[in-house]
Image (cartoon, rainbow, N blue to C red; front, side):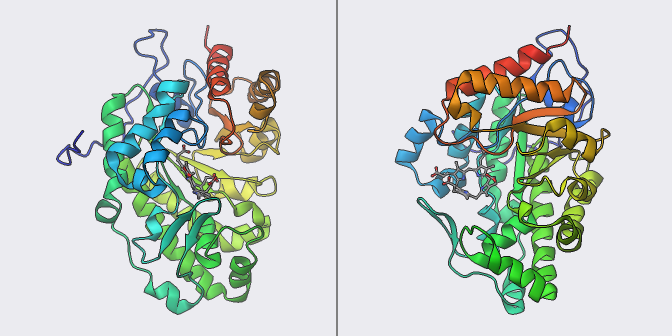
Length: 370
Ligand code: CP3
């Protein structure tokens, strides 16, 4: 397969898609966009964070032949991986196969995905000089492989399934950039945040600009919506979130809203942060499994959508435990428009994909209209 880079840049799809009982017109895309618009679709849309990963034998087979970054940087392979869970699980959204760390290389940082550790940065960012040395990123040139993968996926799906782009949020990226590797408590990153707030704000400002530009480029390449991953932001109090994170994240969501790009704001361990996260923006707020979905939705406000929030480890327990948890999530969502079913965080590598498939079918059957 060759990448046809002369394809017209299709604008993000936002044609009104009304709920209908004609099966030919009821698509995952329509369901997903309805929830993002806070409308009722024909059923609750469902996808899983980390759906394209090590839980799938087909992914593990590809990984035996290719390095992780090689998969990400080869549009044909990234598109192939993105489509695996669409075919195998029947999810309503295809999250593009990439990683939150990809934009840091064009910023001038040395990135290694170390086996069994995660992302490692050879030259961490710790001073104002380090921040000022960071290079601006031009997504169309520097991250063309992600945009080409989006174009390929979109062409293959032909509007049946939503294409979901994503990026890492400034706080989560800043943690990696400052620490240089995954950390348990982000002590070094938070020490810089409290001890050198001017350096912190300079770094967060750069990251917000890169992230907003990158997400807008993904939408221009054909992503129907985008998710911002703030995986580690649960390490902050709501007061510190409001001071050190919210202004930067708000800038990203404002840029998306102004461009008409639907968005999801994800964080983990955010039971103390839901109000300030919602204030920062996003059409849908994604919540982890530690907060009951109905309580989370009340705190976020029913004018917003909600995503979540089955505990991913239930799938390691049994189908009965998975079904019980899924029914509880659906009962708490109570059929309100604006719910996107997901796990609280990513699929665990040991998960049996057959249970994920059953879970997709259960959510669709239990929420189908009529
Ligand atoms: O299916 C999908 O969700 C799309 C692909 C995706 C990956 N990473 C692929 C991946 C997405 C959305 C991400 C986001 C990401 N990357 C986040 C935010 C989401 C979250 O889980 O909170 C974070 C924190 C990262 C950084 C990262 N990338 C880590 C910490 C690791 C190591 C994790 C591990 O278990 O090894 C990665 C590597 C990574 N990213 C893998 C995958 C499929 C595993 C790589 C492999 O095949 O060995």
